[in-house]
Image 1: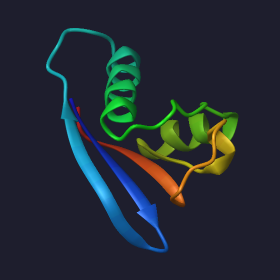
Image 2 (image 1 turned 180 degrees about the vertical axis):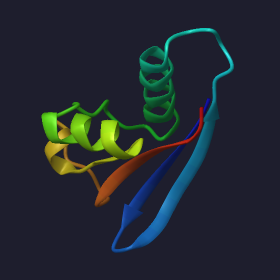
Image 3 (image 1 turned 45 degrees about the horizontal axis):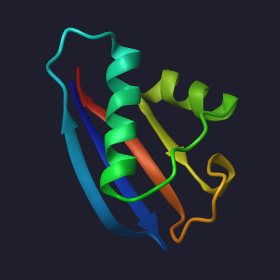
Length: 86
């Protein structure tokens, strides 16, 4: 599985990275582990999965974490997660 993470501000891509996970773990575990790794790499607090975020991710294999998803203030518009290969 490959998951692409992007940080956007004012319609500009500030940072991005792709996390690859070839383990035999479940899809959900792979996504949570990748998100945890990216938050560590980008020095972010872990975002909350709100109902709207979960439904968007289920429909499109893509979701955006905005200020509403974070407890702390963020200096960007949103963190986007996109599964690019299963």
